[in-house]
Image (cartoon, rainbow, N blue to C red; front, side, top):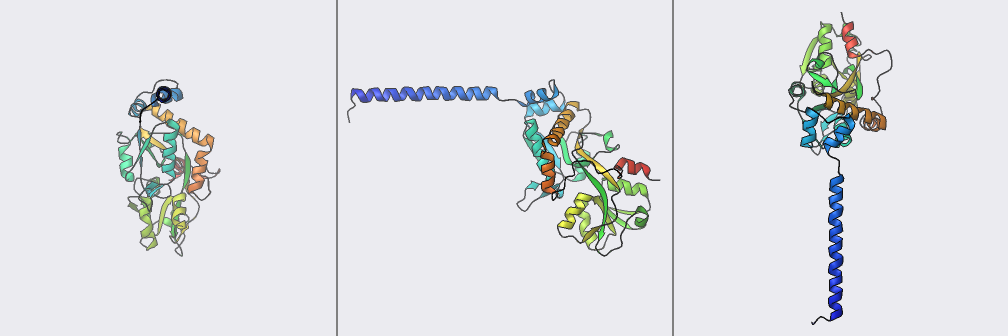
Length: 302
């Protein structure tokens, strides 16, 4: 079909409009791209100076690695779909959102976490690690993000072990490399049976191969709520301040971790995440007066 003059003018007008629209779109994209905040800029704003050390490396990479042991439900575990999930996983993701840097979360056995952090194998552990004097010799810690208590549990119907004296000569299961192992070991006279992780003690306690297990009150509560026939045995022995752990000598990275922890405390997201995973309970504040800290309880042993 032949085109008339009017049709040609209309076609030219349409082409012009499309060209202008494309130009404006390109300008808009360019503007949006130029206004995006880089990790280095974000870190500099938080710190008040350009990041150094590990913080600078992470800013340059644009990502960081969090290590977690998936054998500690509800802190972290593998769900039925094969995904790593739990309270600590949510906290790790929130950390990445606050710092504006994508996070990669990897699963590793607890012993590997303890040995890998001091040698920079992982950027940070967000795995409910207790701050202790011994660990501070090889690792650096953020401010505490929540608290647990060292608790003994026994099988329903078994004798209650409500004191260290009652545990003398008994076999108590604990996770290797934990505060529970160190505490009972210093107390002396207790047959300590170490396992790769706290959760690995539960089948043996259920089957009567252990007299008791010492673990975190929240971990014990999760085991009971999931169907294990256990009961709390006496009062907690101490409380534990739990924090993010990283390698020593990384002041800027620790400052960024502290900033994130403080932000989560202030904006309520830490409490919300804790209540989600701990059946409405909020362990983000220190226990009431009367329960000693782990370091105090350890020092009070003969």
